[in-house]
Image 1 (tube, helix red, strand yellow):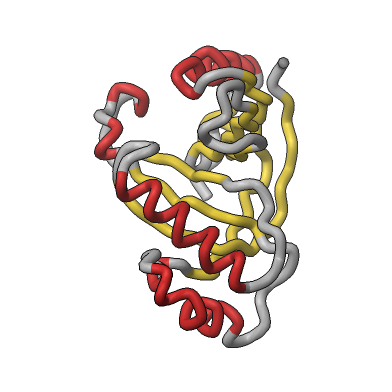
Image 2 (tube, one colour; image 1 turned 90 degrees about the vertical axis):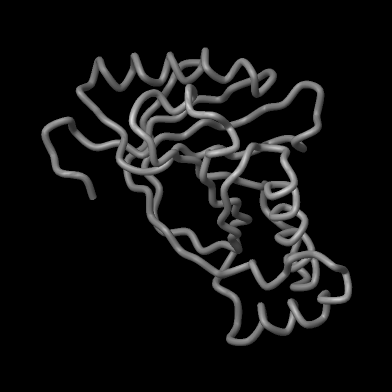
Length: 175
């Protein structure tokens, strides 16, 4: 598929922030905590999403994966009622999941370049290269963390992932 421009307004979500390789203990524990709290809140969760970044100079894919930073999120249809997350955490505390790490957050990405990546995560670099070329043609630069929307389970043998990058014109200051 070809990259496209899209605009995204505010989203409220359950979120866990961490550092580490995708699929590592820290990452899988965060996912478990999110799903545990979301299930206790009673609503079917939206697809899992991840916002990824590194705090080092140079190409992000060259940074060792154990130093990748992330927010793993489950978007909510609406902001939760006051106390709902706290009650859900208490109800599932015996599960052993790290439920105290789950927070409610909101963010707005604005204008983004996105593409549907079909295939293994190890091949995402090809779709990312298409996105980078698309951005260069339009004089756009990244304006926030790389964003992935997992349309299939993470262990699906043929994963489908929306790759999204918030952008701004090259001459504008970062948001």
